[in-house]
Image 1: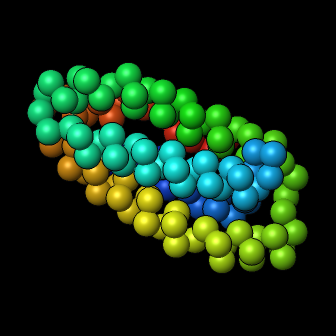
Image 2: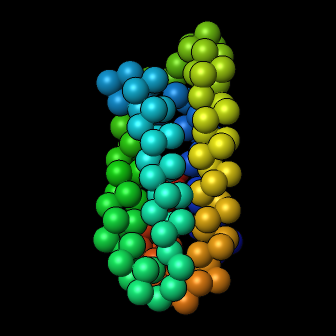
Length: 128
């Protein structure tokens, strides 16, 4: 569990600093916030073994989407200092809120029967 939290945090900061843009940095930041919120929403549905099992396919797909966003963000050139400032201004709070929800749900789910297995279904999220 601790490893998953560290991996999530390792991606959050570089993505927020680099802009993580698909076609644009801003568009990928929006996708990142939406994906992290969707993961948190999905984890919030896990209450027991059966709901943990039911959430696995969606968590797997969301983990893949998250890694795709990260990959596309890494393909961009470094943003200018002005771009970094603008992105931080626009996305710092939404990212902080989304990751806060995600981490809270991950901690809660880790103690639900079948929760650890559901969390593992997301796969590793790491920065290369």
